[in-house]
Length: 372
Image (cartoon, rainbow, N blue to C red; front, side, top):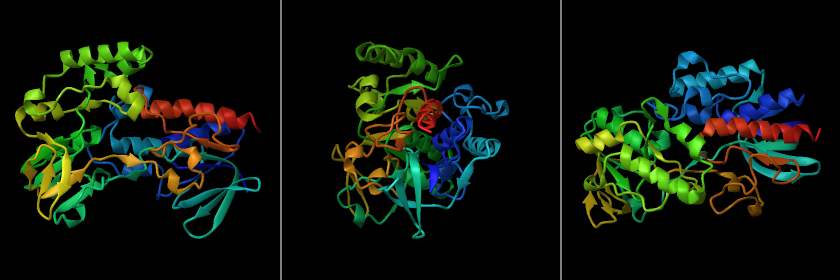
């Protein structure tokens, strides 16, 4: 039996394993993929962090300066590989965990190869961007065109010369739409169900992340008002182009939907120029067409569904009382959800995913270390 096991060798899992070492606690990190940072490796080619390098490093080892202010996907993967090597973390790749159950003295893990492992303490850090989700649109099974989730999108080359519909206007959907427009797609439509909060990634060198950190403590109503005012000053009015202004305040949506704003790295420019055309939400499919919420119909060659992810945790655990209706742990980021069971990496903040992972790694490692 292992003393401590960590599920997931992404940023959160590596950070907590490194911090545990400072408390004199060895942990085994189980990773389903062939290497650390599996989820980052699978993202689209043009991806960069939306948080600045200085505020995105993990405890004990900052991201190298040569990676620049906005770190590229491949550089982040290299950083996480170096992080695991620097702290000599015990990462066991190619290990899929299919079920987790309480054991006689901790937690029992059923692995994909049929074997079992057990640990006195289990830290689950598989992340909230774990399992791609495609909505059950009526008629989707009859659709004869190409449909791929954004998790499988790499670049625009396979879509050159095609009419493409991107569904979802989160950060991934907007960046993929821009990538397609720049990469030779014949046309790009962007289906929008809920109008996004759009912010500039930086203004006069000042990153949006810092606004979130400095103003995030304001009362919800005051923050919502300030965010709406800043958006009107920084972002052109896109209502004539098909993107309405959001009716719900930014902090309210963050609290109720774990929503982060859309950082503009080209989508506003492309909408204004007509390279990306906003359209209504997808309602249903036929074999060759897509019906939209406003009654119009499209006949794209291909669809990229940037429709989000689930945690996948309810498939791992038999205890539904651990999670809310979206599959996010009810207790996470520090204290145990059950004796010997911690969840981390499931909090969405305006300060950034990697910064939050570093914060939670310190909390969880301290909580685990003080019980030894």
